[in-house]
Image (cartoon, rainbow, N blue to C red; front, top):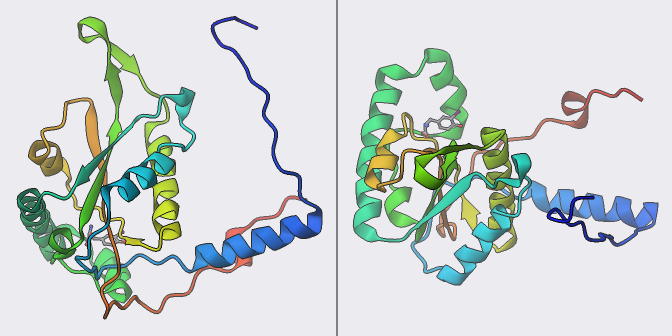
Length: 223
Ligand code: IYR
């Protein structure tokens, strides 16, 4: 083994099959209580909490361990207002012509529209940027790998961390998203991936009465 790539031992707890089943079920039950929420409270959430949630996101696996993501952590009121305005401009155009009829129909049960007041209201906006490549010495482009897969995983880990902290989030995808790069002054190697408001749900928050796919629609068995 090469000296500059050391390996260290790794072990995990060992559970009986019964205990493992129980743990898997309990985790699933807890995970199933996560919902995307569109109605936020403006209640304060400490920055230390947000940093921990983000670092959990950043613990996700990534192509060649390049961790090709940047999490922009935003609480600045003027910037939030600007992002809302720009997102609503794009969303207005999407909902009024850019999206297909089928798409609009698919979204109907979610009750979404072009208004994005949650960007103002939520105490934190996290914008996950994917890093298409890195810039090395003398501007040399260095590769990242499986960037979308990696950043998607980081986003998933982040959302679970949010859920675990008793907070809620919304994976918002204003489209097109280039306005974000400009508003946040991000470098050319970064592309906006998701805009995620995080906070407490509003007292009167509601979520659509959705059900999730059952096992038979999700799993194809090859035993
Ligand atoms: N980007 C729009 C529309 C939208 C699209 C999908 I797919 C959703 O699951 C929800 C919304 C918006 O954020 O409103």
